[in-house]
Length: 503
Image (cartoon, one colour):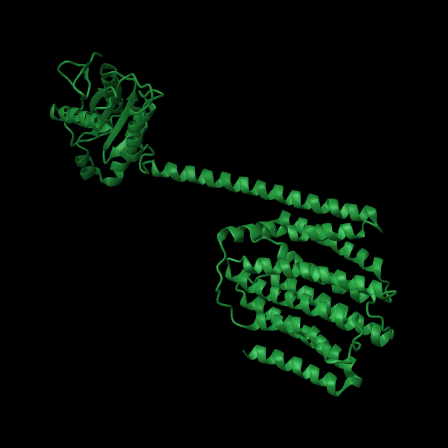
């Protein structure tokens, strides 16, 4: 509220001064123009400091635009006081009045993510430099350093300023409406307030005051119109961060952010087309550069997007791998075992029996009690390495079932072959000869239960798992360090639905 009162007071004092002291009107107006520009620049620095750590560097681009405008005003004062030139459109000041939008145009054209990319900054720098050249060519193709020759040239300059200010006001307004972050909302509120006000007040002043037969500069209160954009920016920059009453749809936000890099390129294209009649090579070159810039930026953005998708997919695969891996042994875990069994059971065209081996470390509790849990973990890792490294075929799948238990899924394996595989694994562990004084065998041994079945619609993987678990129980009851099969008496596999499979 205080900022608004200060702004209103400045406008009122300027208007009263022009009314009361018309003799000093030009000096008074220049003084106020420089003062409000300085006030706006100070407010921009304040806004930058309030934008957090690190500060939002886009405020510095807005500050650069205000500084360029101030240079243009200084050149206008030089024309009036030093060169005693009363021409309304001297070329040097007009050029800076056009050039001043360039830094903030770069800020408006920068998408949040792409703005941090070096390649995007390089493309923006090239296009901004080319646009500055086109500004210079277009300005001095209409006016000379001394000013416009005839009213029509001055009108052409005014329309060029209108076009530039209107385009930037629309671009800033789009960015402001489609913001989803507080710092974007704060910055584009200030930029929109300045350029919308500047476009309106500048259009009215240029066409209906300076070129409309009204009192000349410095002789009427109409000069206060040019104070308004800077005072509006001052109010927007120093007031507290605004409460957002409009939350745009996510699609709108992403669309505007994705389209914003085209603002700079379209400006290059537009001014390139303007200078084609007098400078065809430069104009066509500018138009080509704009098209290439848009295409190159889009291509590089697509490359970054593909790379990001690949990185996310790789991270997802790695994370998924962690979900299905036992952290102690590095084998698959129980969840992975359940999924593998289910997949094998429902594999299309599955005709061969599926064998399951349930493995338990004999007297493992006593091993932990004697040597401690760390030694027990080392023992499990050694057993896992031995089971994986010997005896298993390419299609077999081994997992840690839990605790000191392991499981092996052997697709396409009848019961006799599964029993032979289990015995080979038992002997492999026995050959490790890991000392275990509390075991009747003196070393670490394993017991294995084996079951095999055909996949049917009447049964499921859980039935096979229960059958292997019962076979393991029988092996342990029979003295451990041995293999128990699904049907020890007949040594063949019985289907889980009750029918027989001859191994």
